[in-house]
Length: 329
Image (tube, rainbow, N blue to C red; front, top):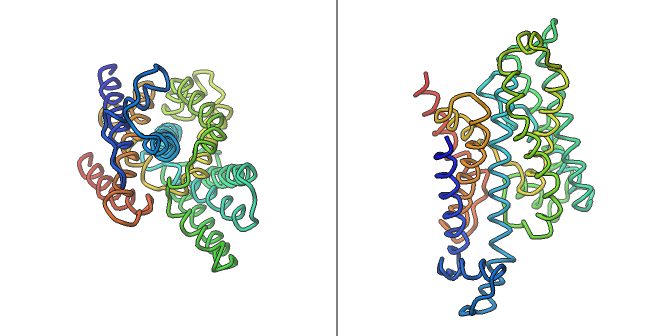
């Protein structure tokens, strides 16, 4: 398993260097590495200032945003799938993304700053996942796998309708284009400032989920079995939902609503590692980072006009997920 993680880390680092190099203004990978190393070790400059500006102020924030978003969505999906014992569960399916998207739309409509927008995004995600959990419970307080999925679909549809209402009320010349483009998902506006601002939320959420991943394995045994082992399942579920919602909300406020990432990557990683979250979570995070970074490279290079990430992840994710379902019966 350590070899798999090391292999994925090497691929991710290599892809990061390639991603910084490619674009409308090509920079040789060796030059990119020199520019990065120069921040740590003084070396002779054989590049122009324009290259350094492109690397650090334009491409580096975008690549870091893609890595954080892909890893966060995939890690969250792996945790949620184990918690609810359902491989179809993801932040997108449970309605977290739609709720967070609604919160962001309200913030955009009101013209709020980035910090307040993050609070709205987080509140929308918490409300959405809470509604999904409440609707998914039966009379005994334990929901079935299918009920949880259907509840997420209902809640997601509800918040999607609210988003449509926000778009209808938005000014068609100023606010509406911003909302529409943001909902399709893009990393074009990620900056070093936004990364610094969101880093505490993402770092704390990822660290908490990573360190507690072995505990979430207990929830995968089932509600009654986890209680028999002495675990406070309610508190453990609440912690998992809060941290995954914080993580997803942070990625939504940074990159918009991007579907199919967590659902596809977490299931693909499970084929490699099995259901044990101790192995699954780090592999899902690394695979998610690689996947979204590769998709973002496609989005900004295959056409003269940048393609929104949400379109590509859906076009790539849906067939891949159908293949996974067919292969695993």
